[in-house]
Amino acid sequence: MKELIICFTENRWYSLDISNNDFVEDYNISNRNKYYTFQVSDLIREIKTKRNKKIPEIINIESLDKQFSQKGKDLLDFKKWHILKSLRRENIIKSNYKITDLNEFLLKIKEFIDKLKEAPCNEWDRFNDIELDINKIIHKTSFDGIKIDRDILDEKCVNLHRNIYNIKNELQFSHNIFQPENFDTQASYLKNKNYRILESVEKTVSLLRKSDGICKQFNRLNKLNRDLKTLMILKSRLGGNNYVNPYFVGFGTVTSRIIIKEPSLQNLKKENRNIIIPNEGKELFYVDYSQFEASILAHLSSDNKLLKLISVDDIYSDIVAKIYNIEVTKSSRKEAKILFYRFLYGDTFENNLKFKEQVKNYFMKFSELSKFKENLIKESIENGYVKTENGNIRKLDINNDNVWILSHFIQSKASYIFKKAIIGVFKKVKDARLLIPLHDGALYEIDIEDSENIKDQIKNIFSLTLKNECNSLTNIKVKEEKFYKN
Image 1 (cartoon, helix red, strand yellow):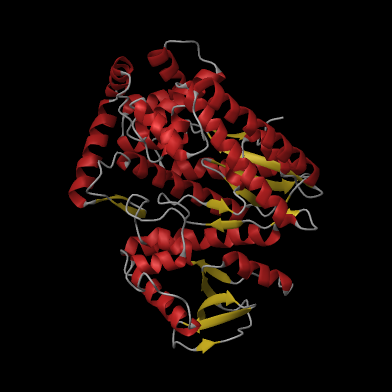
Image 2 (cartoon, one colour):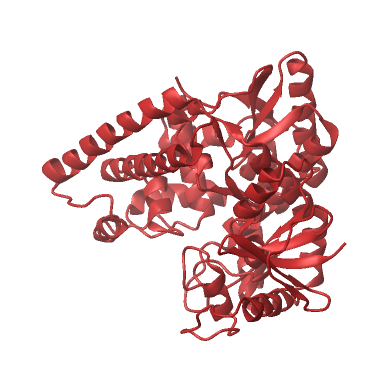
């Protein structure tokens, strides 16, 4: 099997053999070789046109870069990944470089890949043990496609336009906030209210949506705009059929979450998800971990109080009762979950000193958790990076306070466990096809005839995977959830 770097331009594929630098113009794709490319969607489309049923091994260079560069957005000078930006970052090309010779360009990419391969051994262990299997799964989903209801899609687009218009009008005329869809406008509001930016403006607005009315509107506007963009891309991609072949990135974030781009189906609000429909003889099944990251935090910190709370009761309900001192409802529990994530992301609640003291006192009762957090931060600052036992290193920015240290540690472990569960289902449950991986759950398409048995198999695999990685957990909850809201 050959290992080739390939690039598609001018309606043809160009290849470079990694072993001997042999360059070929107008290369014919074969499923017997391994391909490194930054054009995965184009490659899968090419394979489909040749009516091949077998997908070759595909290494997404974007995913490879995000795993092995070990840097978050705070250390990268760009938000949207591009191969030329990555080559410039590693000083492989100059800022004014233009592609004029494809042989030379592919040699530059080879140099870039070789540089990434200098990463620590445990990162390569993770790549071989986890990421290669994840690639097979997501590329198969992209190849087979996801079925879409075109009539519902058209209706959703009309409704989204109307709702966006109404929210913008309200913010402009009732609150004197103009261009509210602009993140700079939202950042200015957060700064004036003395809110701390946690990871990003969009993330901060989301975390504050339950405690601040304007942030609630910003968050809704952000989600509606994102959904509209996704659905408009979806309409343009469908063409004359009812299937979309989305672009997956297996190592899509610095914490290794799988992301779907073009169109971004993962981020659709629940009320817009019913555009996704099963094939004939199939049904949709959405499986979800309960208290996923909180459970992982309890295990890794070895905090008995937190472990007991998660196993016997529910940490979010406890936060409602002890901090908010209100009745536990579906809405108040969601608010408590947001507060937990604010704690995880390093929020200090400076804009509300009384509330800050309540939150501090609540989490201080988990003494082992407090020690664990302090030791993790201290060790990470001394090392200059955060790491987990499964790789996924992230370097610290010495110019920032790196409030995300605990968050990265827990989310990276969560992503690792989630991927292992997905791989387990892929290998053991033949009548289940992954459609959309989410934060702590996954949407599957399963056979109707044996649906209950298949659901039980999937839930058991998810539960056992978490138990194997976090053996101090005694009451793991994996459940079926509604994927969309009527």
